[in-house]
Image 1 (cartoon, one colour):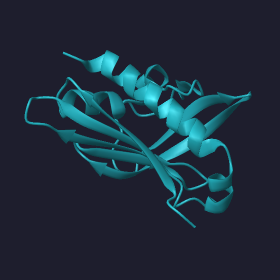
Image 2: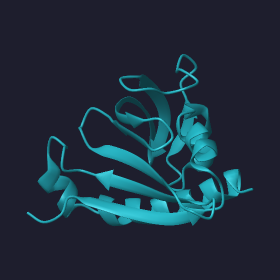
Image 3: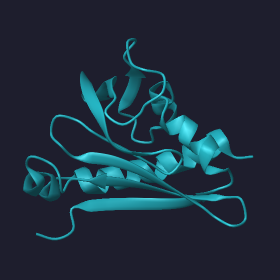
Length: 145
């Protein structure tokens, strides 16, 4: 069965509060996304996410499509995770460090997916890891002091 998640971490020169404000604003997600698949937040999407919030995104992976996500984990300035219809999660964890920086960890977790075996056998874990590495670079550029 194996581990059904992949994570990437980076220390960012910004406090967790500043980073979290980017993560809870779906209109910032296209700027943050390192995969090239997130295009635009739906116009009726909330400007600030919270536990249970639903938010729609226009996506493109080959062909354009729309996706509806639900926030399923939330701790102010520390943690946010969302999932869509297949059940896998995208999780962002923020750990403040003593020097005023923040360790940011993004995780693609397919342990909660409806068909985790298929995701594990696919190219998605490797592809998503590369996208997450680029997302963390973009995030750092957006928020660094």
